[in-house]
Image 1: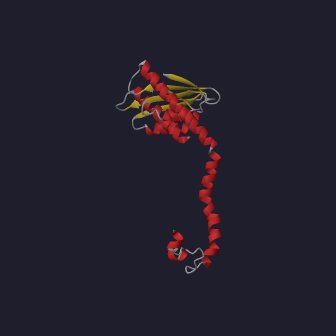
Image 2: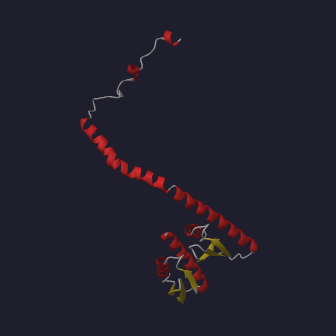
Image 3: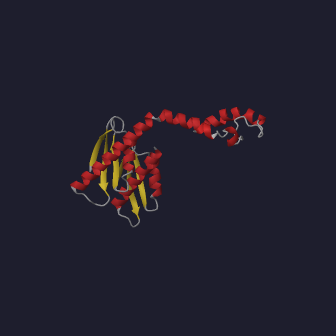
Length: 67
Length: 135
């Protein structure tokens, strides 16, 4: 599970990141209490922890571009 | 390794920029309150090195990068007016003033006229002095 603060990470970037990772994993997202909770459901040849780390970095990159 | 940063000193924009430059070396997660609170930066090395020495080095490099980005942001803000003025002058001045000034002269201009004396040969313009005068 990955919790991202929506005051820091843009919602737009989070949704774009999930969409871009959709070929590697199916990710469920829930926006609650100022956080976006991301949970991978189906994975294709990938480590669950690693994919969340990579996704976190990817979303941070997208957030930087949104600034 | 977690680093707690005061958002009053380091703006969120600078923290994100510094974190962005570390994406190739570490997994970076940000949390906390950007408005008047603390921002927590969680750095996890990608190469798996978890020793205290390598963590400290990573932290030090991150803090340096953060300081650089903070200063860059501050300078950018201070120079905003002059930057906009220079770009404004460069982009918009020629379209209005330049063509107005040259419009009248273009019509009246004749290539045979030489008001500045450009076509006058050097010898005519600066005649040779006699050797006596030179010595």
